[in-house]
Image 1 (cartoon, rainbow, N blue to C red):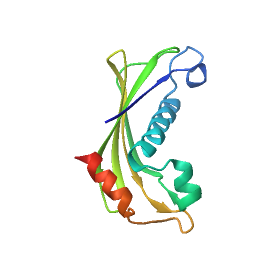
Image 2 (image 1 turned 90 degrees about the vertical axis):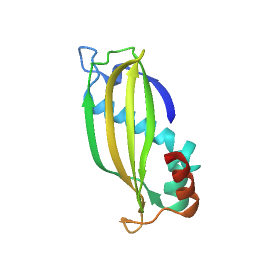
Image 3 (image 1 turned 30 degrees about the vertical axis):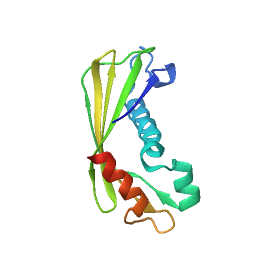
Image 4 (image 1 turned 30 degrees about the horizontal axis):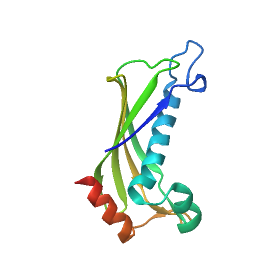
Length: 134
């Protein structure tokens, strides 16, 4: 399981200093973006610019269990739960000092950026994903 922590900044909050839910999703996306090179071996820049591949989110569900406030240090855990022909399912759980704050479940699909169509995982990506999913 991949782990990373980010502080909840003013830019992530509403005027009352409570995390604004679209920013929570943005932080989860940052955690998934940091997960990508750790698991696939290529960061998003290498995927997009070098290989012409994208990894858009096609399905997303979120559960919020407690509010997060300005200054909280949020701990993100990214777990791969399924590898498909061209897709993956991920679960991102977020906590602060051991208290659950929110979680998302998402599906991403590997696409060819030129055509916009899904494509099978390259063998080196599939191998790494299958190792991570065990």
